[in-house]
Image (cartoon, rainbow, N blue to C red; front, side, top):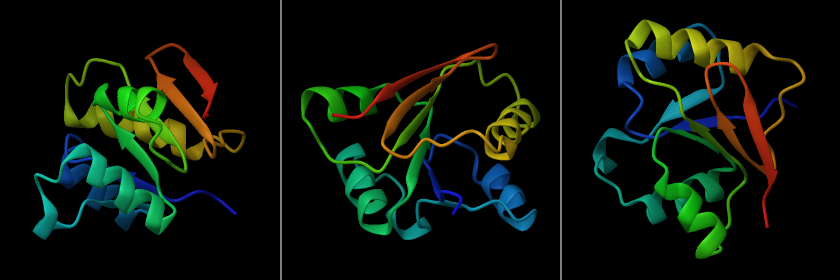
Length: 119
């Protein structure tokens, strides 16, 4: 079964909505919970069994130093030069049949990925 994703609020909502309409298994943080602290984003994603997509490096601290439980995290480390570029790279990631971030912390750069097993 393909993993499902939770886009952190630093990923434009319009992109998330467009990807969802195209059939990608992605949702955003609920509108009523915008501004949610990162720890609560992790709890929400863990309860819903969602992999977090984010540009926020603080998630690494929460997972590796504070040992918060997550299903998986995909940290986007490329310059978000335009919504179109973000959407294009997200499509590449989500379309990759071999990509499975369950139990992993994945750092995505424009030209490569670094994958670390979660503690």
